[in-house]
Image (cartoon, rainbow, N blue to C red; front, side, top):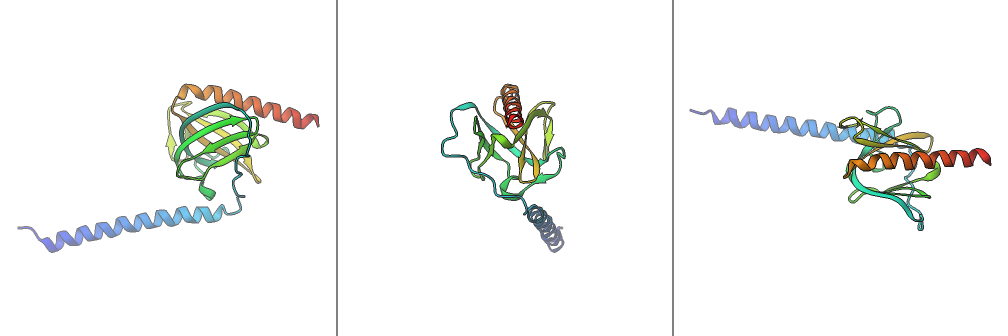
Length: 174
């Protein structure tokens, strides 16, 4: 014979425990966003960014403090994973994310691009993630992307790094 009262008690207890864990995770996410409240608003793309050098579609996996691949940034929607359309122009890097906040990284703010294996919450094979480092306010941020066609990553690294070298030289000549 089954003791239904005990079984129902266990099910209700387990449901309450799962709800508590979910609530604590949500509060932690909101607290992290509050701590990162000093981060300025994300720039929007200019009306005429110029012709596209590279475009790709894939996934945006999140942003972290540069060099600290586990320190996720959640302020202004940067912690939200989503599909993404990347476009690189002379003006900078345009990140369009359906269902999440779009953002634009001006060319002067781009610092480097590299292939890596992970960013907070996502670990892939070596070189499976395109990581773009950029300055925003007084912080350096790493943003991780995975193209639908991973073979494109090398072209993106070369293009962004050549842009940052050109931008640095132009700034030094002035």
